[in-house]
Each structure stands twice: as C-alpha cells, then as structure tokens.
Amino acid sequence: MGCVTRQRTPRCGGRVRRVMRSGAFSSWARTLAVGLVATSAFLAPAPGVAETAPIPRVPAGVTAAGAILIDQADGSVLMGRAIYTERPMASTTKIMTAVVVLETPGLDLDARIPVKSVYHRYAVWKDASTAHLHTGDSLTVRQLLYGLLLPSGSDAAYALADRFGHGSTRTARTAEFISRMNAKAAELGLSRTQFGSFDGLAPTSTNHITPRSLARLASYALGNEQFAAIVRTRTTSVPGWTASGGRRIYTWENTNQLLGRYWGVIGVKTGTTTPAGACLVFAITRGGRTLVGVVLHSASGDARYRDARLILDAAR
Image (cartoon, rainbow, N blue to C red; front, side, top):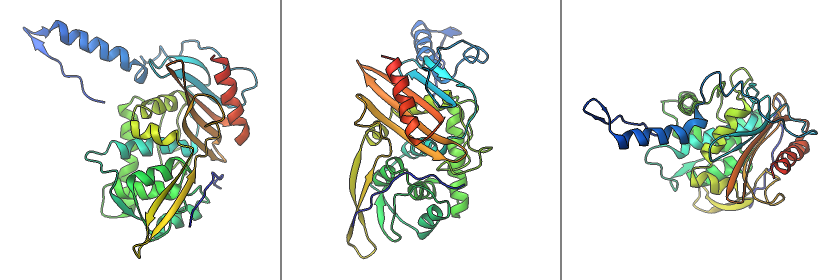
C-alpha cells in the first residue's frame, strides 16, 4: 500500500587552532588562517558592513516580500529584496532539522526508528503536511529524512526530533533538539534567526529567519552529500517494516515543482503557512556555478515558482 503526500497549508565547522612559533604565527599557519577566513566570510559578515551595502534589486514582477540570490562559492549577494528582514519560514525550517540529524556524531542512517501514534496525531492536530507514517511501522533514519524533505512530513520531523533529542520525555527530547537547531544557527552566524519548532509550526515570534540567513543555511546544507541527494530527488518509494514483520511501501513526491521543470535546479525546500505565506528555497547549478535563492511570502503557491524563475532568468 503506497502513500502519496502533498504540501498543505496548516491552520494555524570546525575550529581554527592557533599554531605559535617563537610567539607568533608560522607563515603556513598565517596563510591557512587567511584562507579559512576568506572562504567562510559569507557565514559571518562584518557587522554593519554587509547589511548596509547596496545590492541589485530582484526583477520587477517578483511578488515575494523577501527574496535573495547568492553565489554558493563565496556567499556574495547577487540580488535581493528586504534580505535582512525577519520573516516566518514555515517548513523551510526542516532544512535545519535535517542538518542537525545529519551532523549527529556516529550517525547510522540505516538505524530503524519505530513510528509512534503521537507523530500522526500531531500532524492531524496541526493540519500539517505529512509523510503518512503508520503507527507501529519502523523506518530508517535515511528514509525518514526523505519523508521530512520530499513531502515535508511533520510526522517525520517529530519522529526525528524525538529520536535525536536528549531527555527522559518526548517534550524534553524535542525541546533539546530545537535548542541544538538554534545552537547550529549561532555557530553558522545566522543573524536574526530563531527556531521554535522542528517543523516550522510555531508562532512567528519564536520561528523566524531572514532571506540572507536562510540562503546561507541552505548553501551550508547543500555541502552535505546526503542532504543534496535527497533534495534533488523528485519521487521515491521506500519499504517500511510493519509491526507484524511485513513491508509497507511509502511513496513520496517532492513538493518542489521547479525540479525537472527548470533546467539545472537541484533542490531545495518549500514551505507554506498562513503567517509565512508561500515560501521556497531553491538552488541551481549552471556552468559549474551553484546559485542559491530564497523567496519568502510570495503571493501564492504558484507565484513562488514564478518568482524563482524571474530571479534565475535575471541571473543568466
């Protein structure tokens, strides 16, 4: 029995060690440090400099309240609109959910996670997009990541947060997981960013980001091969294990309608709630160059794709 899902609108790095020789950096260490600063500058721009520098505007006709396009190689901003304004991000939150899972020390992607009834009940209560997980089934971490990022399953997000959070109760585990999402945002230097949930279904006051920070997060996430492989997948079928030892086939389609419809698109994630409007994080590889874009609060679900196309067309 297969399950095909769709997106719905809910109601509602490493450290640099200083190497000293005779009280000063050795020449090779100095060179290394300069190189690292140069290549990571897009993750932590100098306060008051990047945020006031003029940037090209997005094309006329883009409906999104906030938008940006960056070059993944150096983080340079190619065009944008209100790129430092905080906005709710809906299910694009799940990019960070995946990052925290994928960066878990000793991660076993083939480890099985049992599906609890509370995961399904949560998705129903929130009227959220779902991977249609069945209580009692077991799916691997890898499979749940597909369920998280393709159909944007809030039930899959809950399952992962419950499994990878630390604590004696579900509430404690999910809260600790969310705290690690925020810690990762701080580590990456994502300014004006806060995560209040593992799936984006939290009040705007506790779950918001800027287009600039979201583009930087997506650019970082795409550096993980597993993440990149998942978000460029248009559809997949995976076998889950039932409580009786049988198999259940889960079939998921990617909610990102740019995939396969705009040349070179390699992901990344959709999101929709009433406060956030229609959101889209997208990426394209063209001529050996990868560009990462964001539109937040487009006029409609269809408009977010038109907005992305307008932006990408202007970048040719």
